[in-house]
Every structure is written in C-alpha cells, then in structure tokens.
Length: 169
Image (cartoon, rainbow, N blue to C red):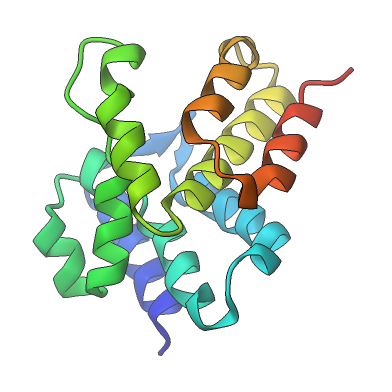
C-alpha cells in the first residue's frame, strides 16, 4: 500500500473516531475534496513528491481536529507527512485571526508543499460553501486577497488565480 492510501485510511479513521463532521456529513467528504483540488494542480508538484503531498492532503486536519500529535501522525505515516500536518495546524486562539496568525503562515511557508495543501483546503472549502449557499462563502470572499498575500509563493499563482475565480458571478 502506498503512503497516500495508507494515510487516507488513517485520516478517515481519526476523524470518525472523534465524530468529526463536515457540515453534518462524514469528514472524509472534505478530505476527498482537498485531494481532488490537489489532483487538479498536481502538475505543480515534482513527480517524486506527489504521493507524500496527496498523503498530506488526507491528514492535514488530524492534529488540529482529531487529538492526534505530530508523533502519532509520523508513526502512522511518515516524517514528511507529519511535517505537513504540523505546518497546517492552526495556532491556539479565540478567533480565526488568532488561530491563523503570522507564525502559522510563516511556518506553513517554511514547510515544502504546505502552501500547496493549504490552497487545496481553501479551494475545497470555498467550492463547498458556494455550492451549499453556506455563510462561510462570504467569509472566504472577504478574506481571499489577504489569504493569498499571507501564503503567496509565485510557484502557486495558478492556484491563487483559480481561487479568485471561484468568487466570480
């Protein structure tokens, strides 16, 4: 079994064991949407790193949402995947701004491919909230330019442009 498939099973199990839902649905719906966004832009990732990046998509919320530690993720997957999950874990905070602070974005940008996964996560969230008519769509729309500025890496400009396009019409 490759690392992406192994990590998929681990992440789904973690979210199920903590009864973590995505808008009253099994959380793997969100994880699958993140992976689908990654597959759309996977050409931006070197071929030899693609399985680790897809694995990172599956596990990106496990530390933050499933009571998993860095070492739990590392043991179940790999050090690279654990580093991605760790870099994508929000800081402690009372609101969105405190949780996604400057340190969070700096650590993300310092971890190879974490920004790619964060774009995939945001694309999945925006796509879902737009489709469902969810109030978060307005929140994401208001945040989009600041979000892109905080995670900007020129290599991912295609993803930034696609994210912006989701708010057209």
